[in-house]
Amino acid sequence: MHTSVLRLRVGIIANPLRAVNEGPYNRSSMVDLSDNLKRIRARMAEAALRSGRSPDSVVLVAVTKQVSVDRIRQAIDAGIRIFGENKIQEAEPKIAQIPAGGEVEWHFIGHLQTNKAMKAVALCQMIQSVDSRKLAERLHLHAQRMGKVIPVLVQVHLGDEATKFGAAPEEVPCLVRAICSLTHLRCAGLMTLPPHRDDPEAMRPFFARLRHLRDKLQSLRLPGTPVQELSMGMSHDFEVAIQEGATMVRIGTALFGPRS
Ligand SMILES: Cc1ncc(COP(=O)(O)O)c(C=O)c1O
Image (cartoon, rainbow, N blue to C red; front, side, top):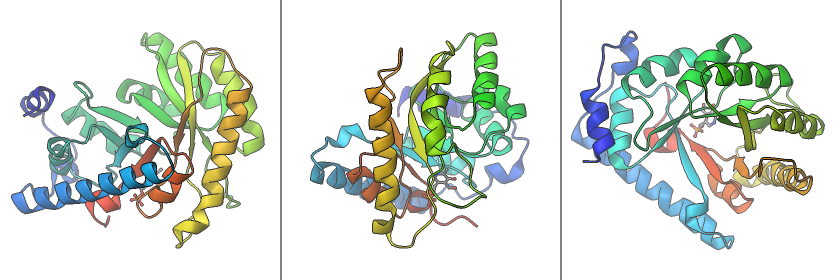
């Protein structure tokens, strides 16, 4: 067994949220998870190769919303290293039991209120959902106090639903510029959660748009950051996202099964 996993196992502490610990930890669910992972990795590799990219150029972020700590441990045993959570209150007890370290990383992928910025900086190795200057400045302040440099992605709102979060595409260059001036944040790229379409092909224009925006930012040659990453694609559309240049795909249900 991987030594960091062994260390994580030994480091279990009492869990304040019982629900987080519930869920079977038996051989058959382990086999399901390994099989799902194998299939997803094969599909990711094929999508990358078909678009002339190396399979290594795309990272899997396993979305653990409503997934128990036991299942997350199974995922680590199966070889997953990067996990994504979209609520601080759900992430906190899980990360207390499975802290980052060894190769395990936690990414924050949900809407972040400024009053939770300190926890996000304390708990996560990347924040994928920065959508305002105010939030960026708050994250920077806490990162500075904790002596950290936190990689962040700017979340871009590409649909027309008023309910979704993210910066409007026209605001993104200005926000990225602002983040580049904050010494304790590193703007690593862009993330999007486009409006859902049943047909994965219908997602392609959104993914292409995020890539064009990233390319435009790269042409600005902003100091101190490559603005490289494109976090886009989920269970039902990750192959299309990879074909359009995703460097990170965020996958929950295809890996862990449907959420309740
Ligand atoms: C921001 C974000 N990305 C990715 C996912 C994963 O979605 P799916 O379960 O369809 O793979 C979720 C799920 O809640 C999410 O909130």
